[in-house]
Length: 440
Image 1 (tube, helix red, strand yellow):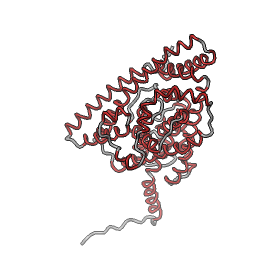
Image 2 (image 1 turned 90 degrees about the vertical axis):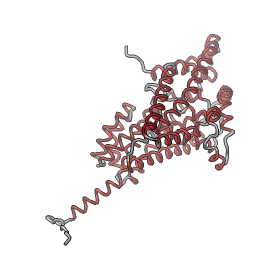
Image 3 (image 1 turned 30 degrees about the horizontal axis):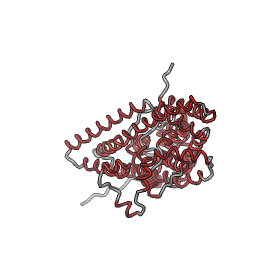
Image 4 (image 1 turned 180 degrees about the vertical axis):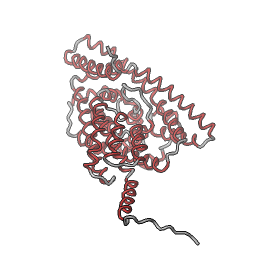
């Protein structure tokens, strides 16, 4: 038999924990209650192991990525590409921040379920919530606390964004060293990041056990309402990503000076690959073909921008992360201040560029520090992340559409200059030759 992937095992564990937990809640079976007593510490240990390793993993990857990228110059197009990526990621996050509360206002959860969830999450979120509630409120105070005075204290409080800023500046400082020391430090931090990634791989092997323990304990306390929460996330996340995907069509047509019909026809083959494979990388050949044949994009768009997009640009990440945060905060009754949302979005945006390569077939846990800093229960976030199979379809669809949109926008001026040159050439008299001017 073909070996089941880690994702498949995690989904099976989720379904088993959900089913047994609901059964134990409805029947109050003593055996199932005792099982809950055994699984609760297992889930807590697994979550603690993740929290212990993910923050060092993220920090070392940020330093290694920035210091390594400093040796490669991509010119003006590279800078413009990065700035456009940054703008689209922030726009996607703000889009989710604006729409998610509107959708959540139409969702109703059983008050008893909410009360049970709040009670279950109290101990898990006390530390993070305290850190979040102690955050400065005014903009001036927030800016003054942007960089930590003590790195260890910031790590204990879960202030991930200041740590990322320090790591980013430290990575930039490494790029200014002499080449020998620059390469030495880059290799050291890359080696540490790889070692941390191997440690995370070992922990992720136990993902099905951790997912079962967390889901079972949650369903045992709340019953079938847990399934309703997971269903709400699937619908909410997929709907917002689909809406943002549709928004990219007029943006690309207007900003890229092309017709919506041409943009749509160029995208269809790549979108079909994206939906069937859930892989942006697998969609690259179809993206290049559509961009070249349908949109007539220059080689800078097909040979540089599109490959860079599929490898580093994932516009779905801010949307999914914001939806998870706001849904869990809504269910648990945790207030989210504007400063909290700002820091969270900025953190997720940074991590989307320098995210470590978490092993495939496993749920993504790289943004866990951001949720810790926001003060929401990590257990709920992890359980939600195990039902990504359906949203993954819309994520990849959005990513591929955004990739083509970025290439269209970035090559607009080059295409305009080429068209003007063609018009001038066609307007010249037939047989005319340029006049050569010589100096006396």
